[in-house]
Image (cartoon, rainbow, N blue to C red; front, side, top):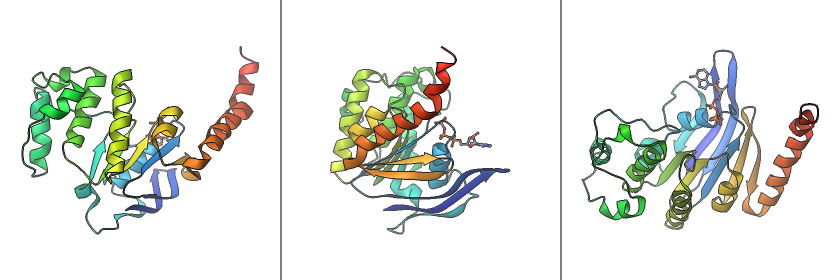
Length: 230
Ligand SMILES: Nc1ncnc2c1ncn2[C@@H]1O[C@H](COP(=O)(O)OP(=O)(O)OP(=O)(O)O)[C@@H](O)[C@H]1O
C-alpha cells in the first residue's frame, strides 16, 4: 500500500498541503478531486519524490522506494527533442534497467506513429505515448495526473477499460480528474481535497452524495453570483 501520512507542504508563506493523509491500496482506483490550485499536483509531486522538502511521510508499506514500484503520468508529459516515440519508450525502459520489448501489441490499441518525433505529436498523442510508456512497464502502482484530459473520445473509453483491467489485476491507481463522470465511472473511492486538506473521503456507495455535495456547494457559492452577472 502507498501511504501518505500528515503531508504538509508550503511554498513560502503559502501552506498548500496542511496535513493530508491518504492510502492507495493494491487493486483499487482512488480518485483525487479538487478545485484548480487545491494542491493535487503538489501532493503527487511529494508522493513521487519530485518534491523533497515537505512534512509528514510517504511510503510504500512493502518497504520498497515509491519510485521503484510506481509509474507517474505527469500533467504535461515532457519529451526530449529529436526522439521518436519508439526511442522514448526504449529510453524509459532502459532508464529503469528493464529489457526492451515489442510495443506492437499495445500500439495496436493506441495507434501512435512511433517512428515520428514525439515532440511533434499532438497533445493527445503525447499523453497516449506517456501512458504507453507506463503500460508496458507493469508497475504495482500508477499515479495519473489528469489522464483523461486531451484524449479523444475513443481513447477515453479505452483508458477507462485499461484502468479497470489493471485494477482487477491488482494495480493500485491514484488519478486526478476534473471530469466527475470519468471519476465516478472508474474509481472505487474518491477523496476531495479542499484548501490543503482532505475534506471528505467517499466510498463508491456514496458517489451519489458526492455529486450532490459538489453541486450544492456550487449552487450556494458560485451560481448565486451569476445571478447578478448574466
Ligand atoms: N513551484 C511552486 N512554487 C510556488 N507555488 C506553487 C508551486 N507549485 C504549485 N504552487 C502553488 O500551489 C498551489 C497548488 O498547486 P497545484 O498545482 O498542486 O494545484 P492543483 O490542485 O494540481 O491544480 P489544477 O487543478 O489547476 O491542476 C497553487 O496555489 C500553486 O500556485
